Image 1 (cartoon, rainbow, N blue to C red):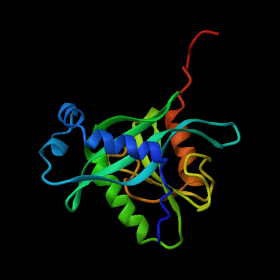
Image 2 (image 1 turned 180 degrees about the vertical axis):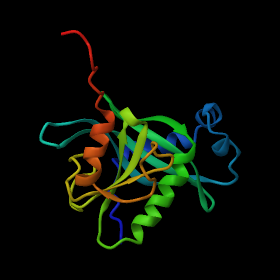
Image 3 (image 1 turned 90 degrees about the vertical axis):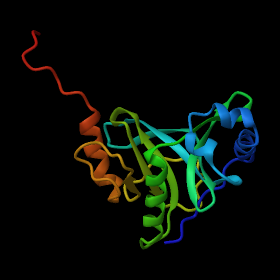
Length: 194
């Protein structure tokens, strides 16, 4: 399926380009892969990063935009990622990072391109489970910074996924959200005095 990557805000991209051009920002980053990269590093595939704050009693996901994440490519592979955040003065560079979610994001995007249909890729973080998913939104005209997961949207858990949730297996929001809600909701204490 062709993915329709939403355009990142121009100031967010500029802030990442400025950080990449700063020897201090790259040297001080905790990203050995980025520091050791040979050749030019370029930001690609900007994805809006949403955070799942809660699920309503009706089962709707309440999310908020946390920033934009760019994969940093050097040569033929992504070596790191850069994240931006919204400040009172506009979009600003936040930090570089590396780890398993870089390769997992690339894998999930390749997987999504081979699926039927068209979607707008986003990232959805589930902090209560230390989980990150590729969110394939069905409304191609939507602003990537807005919206909530629709029941028919797809979520692809990225590796490493929490125990019991298969990484890189697409799930409809309507199927996975109840599982996530159950896992995040604390169990009531049994036998406690009234």
